[in-house]
Length: 259
Length: 303
Image 1: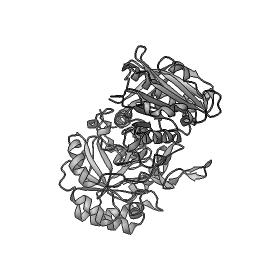
Image 2: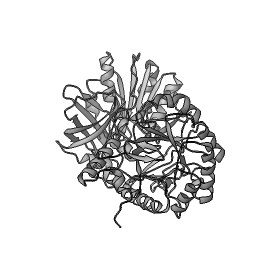
Image 3: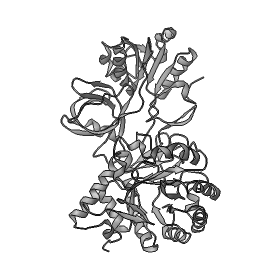
Image 4: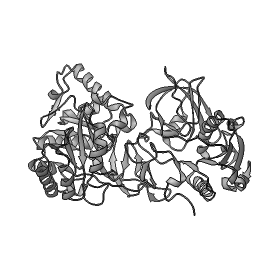
């Protein structure tokens, strides 16, 4: 069930790439843990330009401390305002939203995250861990400085890295990584990040007949399937990314794959 | 508790707070957030004779204190509504109004003919003001003669309450309001969105796939208030006011300007439980001002 809840900021960690991690707890409530790939919609207060909520994917949850982790990059005034939050501040969140990744019947998956799309791969890895799977995770970033979340994967995944400038891992984009030479050893691929990256990954998956789930980030107004602004073109017509996504099988999307 | 009930053409609303078409789906999407029985009514998503896939993405651009949309009436058509959606929502303890759109007069008539016998649909809101479709839509609502013509034809085909939703993209909204009143409309709702556009300066491209779209949100409220006030002085039929209402204070402003009821639109996107808060806030206002009934403030602006 979705809810509108007030959260209090427990901690905010600022990184080196205009990015930060927000640790928030629902006030006098138990956290709805949702599932990997779902997102939350955060109300921004005090912004002269940003009226709509900011959709942010769930990076991780800590059931013991009742904490939701949200990884955010400053891109506009809304996220800049969120970056000003301090411990003890309150924020209003509508959550959990969207469908999330499917993890049933998956044995040896590859997770590919790029940019802020790295964030949901943490919660997804932990979910896979519960099923006895330590997944291979490939992260792509512009530079080593943009890999703020890298250490969070150390115990939960086999980590692989590419950077555009070669400052860490393989130089180039994610599909330049050698792991794609062994792509047929994987039975499922999850990807979240810039569209060009996901399109490249999904195209390789398709050529090798491996199911591939992509997590889209279309601009949206409501987050609950009523404004119909965030639609993506699918084999069954225009569908809302906020409710029927953000996760789609790449084969459901039209005009998405690169031939 | 103040008396919040209002009546429009014999429909008794428990309170004057409705939700606006295109911002509230079919109501059921809000079940997790509020009790629909606490709002006066809901106006459902614009419905056409045949299914429409709407416009390509991107359909939305956020602007200062507002947003542009270019959805383009995506819906599955009236038959799907009647067979699949209506049975799911008819139990709600609130009035249900269906927004009806079309590209031709025949299409409007084709839809409303199917609605006469749907017991739970209390009224239709005739959308002659959608700025996001190539044919019809706003074209009907921007001239008094075409607005009159489509209202007349729909009036002949539809037996129950007919609300006509007016476009603000006109020189004089009172001319259109008077024309549809004369053609048999029982009420007018205003305003629909204002035609606008947004540009990505870096890419030197429009943000919306359709280049232009409809502006809504708090930035349009002063225009909406002005048009409600002008229309209130021009027609006798009740007015449903909308445009940038975010809270109870905004709603009160519309009642003072002459609205009998109000609709909440874009605010539903920001707080899905806002409609009930507005109902409570209106009651608080009336109690604080020792006013017994919402009817006592309609059009009571002290000028």
